[in-house]
Amino acid sequence: METIFSKAIGNHPKIKVLEFLIEGRELDYSVSDIAEGAGIGRTTLFRIWNDFVELGIVKPTRVIGNAKLYKLNLENAFARKMAELFDTLVIEPLNKRKKVVVKN
Image (cartoon, rainbow, N blue to C red):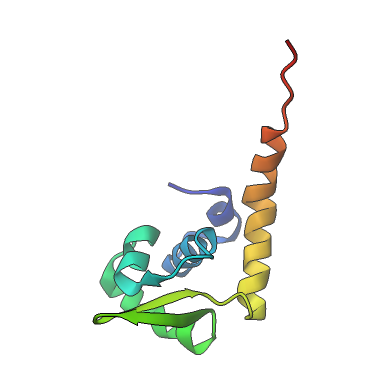
């Protein structure tokens, strides 16, 4: 499903991963969970993953068994600005819709 965020900036696998990480910015995920949540294949994610790590867009948080978990690095200026853009395009319009007052 295409969102207004992906419509605005593209539907590339990197955008899908970024959108997934932004939506769950408070949580950490395994690489497999990220691929599934972003709706892309693990092979595709492994092909682009090093860019996220090298640019500091994601940061490792902990290790559970053999799985290394990552989350969006909001200390990274790019990640922070993309999260702000997501909030502007997606979250703020939703909040405005919730403020509808029903009078009896």
